[in-house]
Image 1 (tube, rainbow, N blue to C red):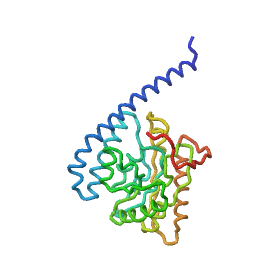
Image 2: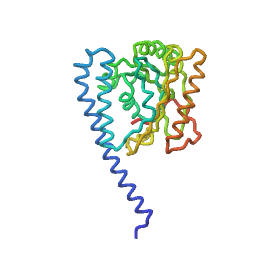
Image 3: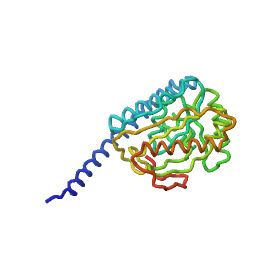
Length: 274
């Protein structure tokens, strides 16, 4: 006779199988979007001005991808702080929590145009990396920290002064829910050097899109956008970095179902990535 534990295990196994099927369909959808949008990106997008190209090459396919994620995997998003999304034409430094790949797809649909600070290896990804290169992201070699920081400051300042936002993940890698990693000061330094305002962004995406599994789980991701931190000559890079780090961590604690375990991640790489 089956026990309640056996029934619960059976139900859990069935649910996991359903999640795997839904995730498989999503990755097929993502592949299809990339293959199809690659063509207009290089036949139309390449001739557009940089800001318009950003919308055409990145924002539109990301919107289609997020729509498919919601339909196929049941992952939705609630956003707090929409009133803080820039509309004044200035370039902002976006300092965001990093838990999964989800934010790299969703944030372009929310705050645009923006470019990301990304590892140079992404440039060599077929199709996706080539499309990414069209919007002039800031490719860095993370093994050479000093030169990478100089690139972020010089290229980032250029993008900001052109009215294009720069997205930085201060943790430098994806950190699982319930864990933290000390923030690097590169994004804060870019803001202070360029005199650009800062938006801090917190979310709990890793609870639906885990970094250690390819399977996506239905649910609602919560994302919070801070009020702008305006450039202030009296606010040092270290103080700005600490301010945004504390705000992001406190918001992640508030919106997450996974409590902070007290574990600090030291490694530059978080392992598996899906």
